[in-house]
Image 1 (cartoon, one colour):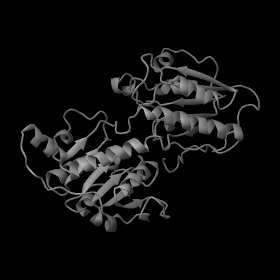
Image 2 (tube, one colour):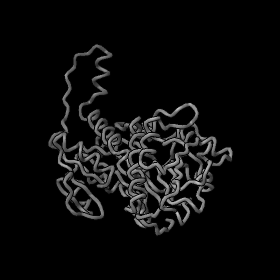
Image 3 (spheres, one colour):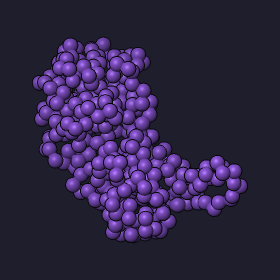
Length: 360
């Protein structure tokens, strides 16, 4: 892990000069970019510029930056999403609008004060972030979309909807026994922004939600909060939701050992990072009936290889790391940028500055 000591309060370069803000590339989870590789709507532009008359907004596509083009002015603030150091992703079709890591490095001149990433994770930005630049991550940007996707997967499984579709196509009037989410217990590994989004919806379904995080202080969205103790929690989990970042502490946190502690009817979902859950152990647990079902939106290798055993694993739903995709993602990124620009101008702490030592 790269070590940084970035302040939450970042003073502007000057008290009255222009603040050059660069929006670079397109957020990975934004579903409707323009053909030229930009995405800010007129409403987005107006919202950003209305923060202060000092704001000078610049918008460049990934291709412009890749060609070596420079912004009209050295940026003081950047909003972007990057492929980081993964050069093999630079020409990937599924990441075609993300800015290459080397282009982000080129933009980090002495006048750059902070960079807001459109990603919830920090692992792509941390290795290429200049020591003098403060980072902001996308807090509360993707929570709603991810939570809805997890609940959809849970309902698909509990209500046996795939079987019902098959019966309809075959013109079969077969009644099926199915379960309810109401009254069931969900254990959330990672009671942060993503986990909280799920907890909010799960509580609306009448579920009991137990959270696990470093700080076990009570939280209003959870019926109980724990700092550990999975051996006691997992046997009573009807649903296990992993919403954790990739850190040395979370690698292979859920393996065959933890899966064996779950009840046979349990359902597992991973929406954080693929490395948190041992994929081979999960596939084996599903094939052997150790657990009843699972949903994966994140993977150790992305894109998932065509020869991966996961594709044919029974009772496993796969989505290609797009469970958070939404046209609303653009609005939320702009809202957070505007909020932090106001904090910046007022000399207040920026929201979303990560703890690099913790890894999130």
